[in-house]
Image 1: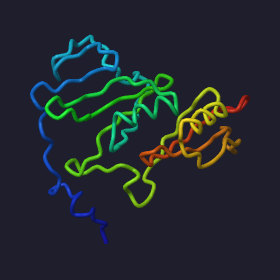
Image 2 (image 1 turned 30 degrees about the vertical axis):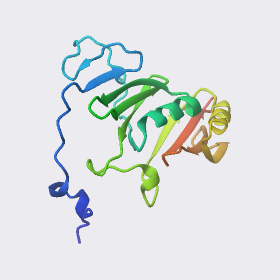
Image 3 (image 1 turned 45 degrees about the horizontal axis):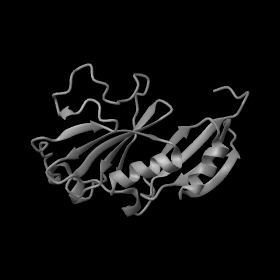
Image 4 (image 1 turned 45 degrees about the vertical axis):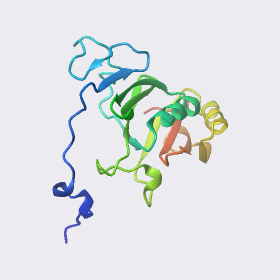
Length: 183
């Protein structure tokens, strides 16, 4: 028996992507490189991933602006860019960086067939991130309101790791490689 997607997720039931509204812009947080989609200079630093990062998590959330603020305050991410539709000021896409790697963030929307992790009946994914000092990182995350699901502890595979949940319901694993442990 072949498993089927719920009807709302079947390809034939998905809405067709709408084109960007006239004037839709990509805006890095620092204001550099502002321009209409497709009109940025080819040499503009658009805040994308490094060439080494081949897999990029894309998280869907209900409030992109609040989520960017939380990622910065709790986990130390740097706000890199966001795209806003000027006709309704809706945040469409954002990127946040930590240690040279990025996560992409999109607006959870029934129109696109996406949902925030907190609206789902079970955990669907987690994001594993290496940081310099996992114990200090955990203290910062806790102080900023992250839900700590597992305290930092040494794991058999050589990482010291803690687990946190953000306000949107996404699960994060933060780790530091233990000294003398080969990968």
